[in-house]
Figure 1 (spheres, rainbow, N blue to C red):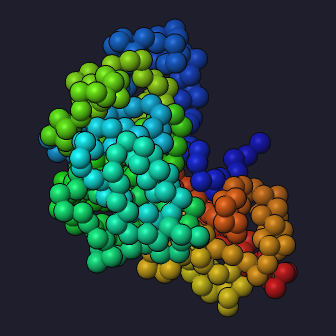
Figure 2 (cartoon, helix red, strand yellow; figure 1 turned 90 degrees about the horizontal axis):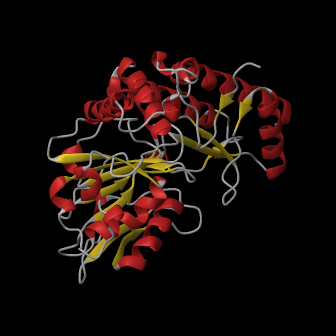
Length: 360
Protein backbone atom coordinates (compact mmCIF):
# COMPACT_ATOMS: atom_id res chain seq x y z
CA UNK A 1 0.00 0.00 0.00
CA UNK A 2 1.28 3.46 -0.89
CA UNK A 3 1.59 6.21 1.70
CA UNK A 4 -1.42 8.48 2.18
CA UNK A 5 -1.32 12.20 2.84
CA UNK A 6 -1.79 12.42 6.60
CA UNK A 7 -3.43 15.68 7.65
CA UNK A 8 -3.96 14.45 11.22
CA UNK A 9 -3.39 16.90 14.08
CA UNK A 10 -1.28 14.54 16.18
CA UNK A 11 0.17 12.00 16.29
CA UNK A 12 1.08 13.41 12.94
CA UNK A 13 3.11 12.89 9.79
CA UNK A 14 6.81 12.26 10.33
CA UNK A 15 9.70 12.55 7.86
CA UNK A 16 9.72 9.51 5.60
CA UNK A 17 13.50 9.51 5.77
CA UNK A 18 13.34 9.11 9.55
CA UNK A 19 10.75 6.33 9.40
CA UNK A 20 12.67 4.38 6.76
CA UNK A 21 15.92 4.70 8.72
CA UNK A 22 14.19 3.42 11.84
CA UNK A 23 12.68 0.55 9.86
CA UNK A 24 16.08 -0.45 8.52
CA UNK A 25 17.71 -0.39 11.96
CA UNK A 26 14.77 -1.62 14.06
CA UNK A 27 15.70 -5.29 14.35
CA UNK A 28 19.48 -4.94 14.55
CA UNK A 29 20.67 -1.45 15.43
CA UNK A 30 23.99 -0.80 13.68
CA UNK A 31 25.12 -4.40 14.02
CA UNK A 32 24.62 -4.54 17.79
CA UNK A 33 22.41 -7.61 17.54
CA UNK A 34 19.46 -5.94 19.23
CA UNK A 35 16.90 -3.21 18.66
CA UNK A 36 17.33 0.32 19.97
CA UNK A 37 14.24 -0.46 22.07
CA UNK A 38 16.10 -3.27 23.85
CA UNK A 39 19.29 -1.42 24.70
CA UNK A 40 20.36 -0.12 28.08
CA UNK A 41 19.88 3.61 28.35
CA UNK A 42 23.30 3.68 30.04
CA UNK A 43 25.10 1.97 27.14
CA UNK A 44 27.38 3.75 24.68
CA UNK A 45 25.16 3.03 21.66
CA UNK A 46 22.12 4.70 23.18
CA UNK A 47 24.23 7.46 24.74
CA UNK A 48 25.27 8.56 21.25
CA UNK A 49 21.59 8.80 20.23
CA UNK A 50 20.65 10.72 23.38
CA UNK A 51 23.53 13.16 22.97
CA UNK A 52 22.81 13.83 19.31
CA UNK A 53 19.13 14.48 20.01
CA UNK A 54 20.03 17.09 22.64
CA UNK A 55 22.76 18.63 20.48
CA UNK A 56 20.47 18.86 17.46
CA UNK A 57 17.81 20.66 19.49
CA UNK A 58 20.37 23.17 20.73
CA UNK A 59 21.58 23.83 17.18
CA UNK A 60 18.11 24.16 15.69
CA UNK A 61 16.75 26.42 18.42
CA UNK A 62 19.92 28.37 19.11
CA UNK A 63 19.73 27.48 22.80
CA UNK A 64 22.19 29.50 24.95
CA UNK A 65 24.36 27.79 27.55
CA UNK A 66 22.33 29.24 30.41
CA UNK A 67 19.32 27.13 29.35
CA UNK A 68 18.82 23.42 29.97
CA UNK A 69 17.27 21.14 27.34
CA UNK A 70 15.24 18.35 28.92
CA UNK A 71 13.68 15.20 27.43
CA UNK A 72 10.78 14.21 29.66
CA UNK A 73 7.78 11.91 29.71
CA UNK A 74 4.13 12.88 29.97
CA UNK A 75 3.78 15.08 26.90
CA UNK A 76 2.65 18.69 27.12
CA UNK A 77 -0.17 17.78 29.49
CA UNK A 78 2.39 16.74 32.07
CA UNK A 79 3.99 20.16 31.71
CA UNK A 80 0.70 21.88 32.50
CA UNK A 81 1.33 20.70 36.07
CA UNK A 82 5.14 20.73 36.23
CA UNK A 83 5.44 24.37 35.20
CA UNK A 84 3.47 25.87 38.10
CA UNK A 85 4.91 23.28 40.49
CA UNK A 86 8.43 24.45 39.60
CA UNK A 87 7.96 28.16 38.92
CA UNK A 88 5.02 29.33 41.04
CA UNK A 89 5.86 29.91 44.69
CA UNK A 90 3.42 30.43 47.56
CA UNK A 91 1.99 33.95 47.54
CA UNK A 92 2.83 34.55 43.88
CA UNK A 93 0.56 34.78 40.85
CA UNK A 94 1.07 33.24 37.42
CA UNK A 95 -0.38 35.07 34.41
CA UNK A 96 -2.03 33.01 31.66
CA UNK A 97 -3.46 33.95 28.28
CA UNK A 98 -6.54 31.91 27.39
CA UNK A 99 -6.43 31.57 23.62
CA UNK A 100 -8.38 28.34 23.21
CA UNK A 101 -8.78 24.73 24.25
CA UNK A 102 -5.16 23.93 25.04
CA UNK A 103 -4.53 27.15 26.91
CA UNK A 104 -7.68 26.43 28.93
CA UNK A 105 -6.30 23.04 29.95
CA UNK A 106 -3.04 24.63 31.09
CA UNK A 107 -4.96 27.20 33.13
CA UNK A 108 -7.13 24.57 34.78
CA UNK A 109 -4.09 22.60 35.91
CA UNK A 110 -2.18 25.65 37.14
CA UNK A 111 -5.11 26.71 39.31
CA UNK A 112 -4.73 23.46 41.25
CA UNK A 113 -1.19 24.50 42.17
CA UNK A 114 -1.53 28.21 42.93
CA UNK A 115 -2.94 31.62 42.07
CA UNK A 116 -3.64 32.26 38.40
CA UNK A 117 -4.64 35.48 36.67
CA UNK A 118 -6.11 35.16 33.17
CA UNK A 119 -4.72 38.34 31.63
CA UNK A 120 -6.50 38.02 28.27
CA UNK A 121 -9.25 35.73 27.06
CA UNK A 122 -10.02 35.02 23.43
CA UNK A 123 -10.80 31.38 24.14
CA UNK A 124 -14.55 31.63 24.65
CA UNK A 125 -16.76 29.54 22.37
CA UNK A 126 -14.82 28.96 19.12
CA UNK A 127 -11.84 31.33 19.13
CA UNK A 128 -10.91 32.97 15.83
CA UNK A 129 -8.20 35.36 16.98
CA UNK A 130 -5.44 35.87 19.54
CA UNK A 131 -4.93 38.84 21.84
CA UNK A 132 -2.48 41.58 20.97
CA UNK A 133 0.27 42.60 23.35
CA UNK A 134 -1.84 45.65 24.24
CA UNK A 135 -4.64 43.33 25.40
CA UNK A 136 -2.47 41.73 28.09
CA UNK A 137 -3.17 43.02 31.61
CA UNK A 138 -0.14 41.56 33.35
CA UNK A 139 0.12 41.19 37.10
CA UNK A 140 2.94 43.27 38.63
CA UNK A 141 5.58 40.87 39.90
CA UNK A 142 3.99 37.82 38.24
CA UNK A 143 5.99 34.59 38.49
CA UNK A 144 5.65 34.07 34.73
CA UNK A 145 3.37 34.69 31.75
CA UNK A 146 2.09 31.62 29.89
CA UNK A 147 0.95 31.54 26.27
CA UNK A 148 0.07 28.82 23.76
CA UNK A 149 1.93 29.72 20.58
CA UNK A 150 -0.39 27.81 18.24
CA UNK A 151 -3.91 26.58 18.92
CA UNK A 152 -4.37 23.41 16.89
CA UNK A 153 -8.16 23.30 17.21
CA UNK A 154 -8.91 26.90 16.22
CA UNK A 155 -6.06 27.24 13.73
CA UNK A 156 -4.67 30.41 15.30
CA UNK A 157 -1.02 31.28 15.86
CA UNK A 158 0.97 34.04 17.54
CA UNK A 159 2.86 35.82 14.77
CA UNK A 160 4.68 38.20 17.12
CA UNK A 161 5.39 37.10 20.66
CA UNK A 162 4.59 39.52 23.48
CA UNK A 163 7.31 41.26 25.45
CA UNK A 164 6.71 40.72 29.15
CA UNK A 165 8.46 41.78 32.34
CA UNK A 166 7.93 38.33 33.85
CA UNK A 167 9.54 35.26 32.23
CA UNK A 168 7.56 34.23 29.16
CA UNK A 169 6.53 30.56 29.07
CA UNK A 170 5.17 29.04 25.85
CA UNK A 171 3.46 25.80 24.94
CA UNK A 172 4.88 25.25 21.44
CA UNK A 173 3.59 21.73 20.98
CA UNK A 174 2.21 22.31 17.50
CA UNK A 175 4.71 24.74 16.01
CA UNK A 176 8.07 24.11 17.66
CA UNK A 177 10.94 24.10 15.13
CA UNK A 178 8.57 25.39 12.44
CA UNK A 179 9.84 29.00 12.45
CA UNK A 180 12.72 30.94 13.98
CA UNK A 181 12.46 32.71 17.34
CA UNK A 182 14.88 34.04 19.94
CA UNK A 183 15.19 31.62 22.84
CA UNK A 184 16.46 34.39 25.11
CA UNK A 185 13.03 36.05 24.86
CA UNK A 186 11.55 33.12 26.79
CA UNK A 187 12.04 31.73 30.26
CA UNK A 188 10.73 28.31 29.23
CA UNK A 189 9.31 26.65 26.13
CA UNK A 190 7.88 23.16 25.95
CA UNK A 191 6.31 20.84 23.44
CA UNK A 192 4.77 17.43 23.18
CA UNK A 193 6.67 15.54 20.50
CA UNK A 194 3.84 14.13 18.41
CA UNK A 195 3.45 16.97 15.92
CA UNK A 196 6.88 18.26 14.86
CA UNK A 197 9.39 16.26 16.90
CA UNK A 198 8.58 12.55 16.75
CA UNK A 199 6.16 10.03 18.25
CA UNK A 200 3.92 10.63 21.26
CA UNK A 201 5.00 10.04 24.84
CA UNK A 202 7.87 12.52 24.92
CA UNK A 203 8.08 16.19 25.87
CA UNK A 204 10.90 18.62 25.15
CA UNK A 205 11.43 21.39 27.70
CA UNK A 206 13.92 24.23 27.33
CA UNK A 207 14.22 26.19 30.57
CA UNK A 208 16.47 28.99 31.78
CA UNK A 209 18.69 27.53 34.47
CA UNK A 210 18.08 30.22 37.06
CA UNK A 211 14.33 29.55 36.93
CA UNK A 212 14.91 25.95 38.01
CA UNK A 213 16.13 27.30 41.35
CA UNK A 214 12.64 28.61 42.11
CA UNK A 215 11.25 25.13 42.70
CA UNK A 216 9.88 24.66 46.26
CA UNK A 217 11.44 21.86 48.29
CA UNK A 218 8.00 20.29 48.70
CA UNK A 219 7.93 19.28 45.02
CA UNK A 220 8.79 15.57 44.62
CA UNK A 221 12.22 14.85 43.19
CA UNK A 222 10.98 13.41 39.90
CA UNK A 223 8.83 16.47 39.19
CA UNK A 224 11.67 18.98 39.53
CA UNK A 225 13.30 20.33 36.38
CA UNK A 226 16.60 20.61 38.22
CA UNK A 227 16.62 16.85 38.83
CA UNK A 228 16.46 16.07 35.13
CA UNK A 229 18.91 18.82 34.18
CA UNK A 230 21.52 17.52 36.61
CA UNK A 231 21.08 13.97 35.28
CA UNK A 232 21.10 14.90 31.57
CA UNK A 233 17.49 13.65 31.25
CA UNK A 234 18.60 10.21 32.47
CA UNK A 235 17.34 10.40 36.05
CA UNK A 236 15.01 7.51 35.24
CA UNK A 237 14.76 5.26 32.19
CA UNK A 238 13.84 7.66 29.38
CA UNK A 239 11.53 6.88 26.44
CA UNK A 240 14.46 5.65 24.40
CA UNK A 241 12.66 4.88 21.14
CA UNK A 242 10.90 8.25 21.15
CA UNK A 243 14.23 9.98 21.70
CA UNK A 244 15.75 7.93 18.88
CA UNK A 245 12.98 9.14 16.55
CA UNK A 246 13.50 12.69 17.82
CA UNK A 247 17.16 12.35 16.89
CA UNK A 248 16.31 11.16 13.38
CA UNK A 249 13.68 13.89 12.93
CA UNK A 250 16.03 16.68 14.02
CA UNK A 251 18.80 15.23 11.86
CA UNK A 252 16.41 15.42 8.89
CA UNK A 253 15.47 18.98 9.79
CA UNK A 254 19.10 20.06 9.81
CA UNK A 255 19.46 18.61 6.29
CA UNK A 256 16.42 20.65 5.25
CA UNK A 257 18.23 23.86 6.10
CA UNK A 258 17.28 24.01 9.74
CA UNK A 259 14.41 26.03 11.13
CA UNK A 260 14.89 28.89 8.66
CA UNK A 261 14.75 26.48 5.73
CA UNK A 262 11.67 24.62 6.89
CA UNK A 263 9.93 27.90 7.77
CA UNK A 264 10.07 28.99 4.13
CA UNK A 265 8.51 25.71 3.05
CA UNK A 266 5.86 25.90 5.77
CA UNK A 267 4.86 29.42 4.78
CA UNK A 268 4.60 28.43 1.13
CA UNK A 269 2.44 25.40 1.94
CA UNK A 270 0.07 27.42 4.12
CA UNK A 271 -0.14 30.30 1.65
CA UNK A 272 -1.15 27.97 -1.18
CA UNK A 273 -3.91 26.40 0.90
CA UNK A 274 -5.25 29.71 2.21
CA UNK A 275 -5.25 31.05 -1.35
CA UNK A 276 -7.48 28.16 -2.39
CA UNK A 277 -9.86 28.92 0.46
CA UNK A 278 -9.97 32.66 -0.20
CA UNK A 279 -10.25 32.16 -3.94
CA UNK A 280 -13.34 29.94 -3.73
CA UNK A 281 -15.83 32.81 -3.84
CA UNK A 282 -17.00 32.08 -0.30
CA UNK A 283 -17.64 28.38 -0.83
CA UNK A 284 -14.81 27.63 1.57
CA UNK A 285 -14.61 29.99 4.53
CA UNK A 286 -11.56 30.18 6.77
CA UNK A 287 -12.42 30.26 10.46
CA UNK A 288 -9.42 32.15 11.85
CA UNK A 289 -9.00 35.91 11.54
CA UNK A 290 -6.55 36.44 8.68
CA UNK A 291 -3.76 38.04 10.73
CA UNK A 292 -3.76 35.11 13.17
CA UNK A 293 -3.99 32.25 10.68
CA UNK A 294 -1.80 29.31 11.61
CA UNK A 295 0.83 27.93 9.25
CA UNK A 296 0.46 24.54 10.97
CA UNK A 297 -3.30 24.00 11.27
CA UNK A 298 -5.54 25.39 8.54
CA UNK A 299 -9.25 25.42 9.43
CA UNK A 300 -12.27 26.15 7.26
CA UNK A 301 -15.96 25.45 6.74
CA UNK A 302 -18.14 24.48 3.80
CA UNK A 303 -21.69 25.78 3.18
CA UNK A 304 -23.24 23.07 5.37
CA UNK A 305 -22.31 20.05 7.48
CA UNK A 306 -23.63 17.59 4.92
CA UNK A 307 -21.14 18.80 2.35
CA UNK A 308 -18.39 18.82 4.97
CA UNK A 309 -19.03 15.16 5.71
CA UNK A 310 -19.03 14.37 1.99
CA UNK A 311 -15.80 16.34 1.52
CA UNK A 312 -14.05 14.38 4.27
CA UNK A 313 -15.30 11.04 2.96
CA UNK A 314 -14.31 11.67 -0.64
CA UNK A 315 -10.93 13.12 0.32
CA UNK A 316 -10.21 10.04 2.40
CA UNK A 317 -11.06 7.81 -0.55
CA UNK A 318 -8.46 9.73 -2.56
CA UNK A 319 -5.76 9.13 0.05
CA UNK A 320 -6.10 12.36 2.05
CA UNK A 321 -6.69 11.33 5.64
CA UNK A 322 -7.36 13.20 8.88
CA UNK A 323 -9.18 16.25 7.51
CA UNK A 324 -12.08 16.20 9.94
CA UNK A 325 -12.10 19.19 12.27
CA UNK A 326 -11.88 18.72 16.01
CA UNK A 327 -15.05 17.28 17.49
CA UNK A 328 -15.60 20.44 19.57
CA UNK A 329 -15.79 22.77 16.56
CA UNK A 330 -16.45 20.67 13.45
CA UNK A 331 -15.53 21.78 9.96
CA UNK A 332 -12.33 20.88 8.15
CA UNK A 333 -8.79 21.00 9.49
CA UNK A 334 -5.59 20.35 7.57
CA UNK A 335 -2.59 19.93 9.84
CA UNK A 336 0.49 20.57 7.72
CA UNK A 337 3.45 20.28 10.07
CA UNK A 338 7.12 20.34 9.11
CA UNK A 339 7.17 16.85 7.62
CA UNK A 340 3.99 17.27 5.58
CA UNK A 341 5.03 17.19 1.89
CA UNK A 342 4.20 20.05 -0.49
CA UNK A 343 2.76 17.46 -2.90
CA UNK A 344 0.01 16.86 -0.37
CA UNK A 345 -1.00 20.51 -0.53
CA UNK A 346 -1.18 20.32 -4.32
CA UNK A 347 -3.37 17.23 -4.10
CA UNK A 348 -5.72 18.84 -1.57
CA UNK A 349 -6.05 22.09 -3.51
CA UNK A 350 -6.87 20.18 -6.70
CA UNK A 351 -9.48 18.14 -4.84
CA UNK A 352 -11.02 21.28 -3.31
CA UNK A 353 -11.55 22.72 -6.78
CA UNK A 354 -13.03 19.47 -8.09
CA UNK A 355 -15.33 19.16 -5.10
CA UNK A 356 -16.61 22.72 -5.39
CA UNK A 357 -17.32 22.27 -9.09
CA UNK A 358 -19.31 19.10 -8.40
CA UNK A 359 -21.04 20.23 -5.20
CA UNK A 360 -21.36 23.99 -5.49
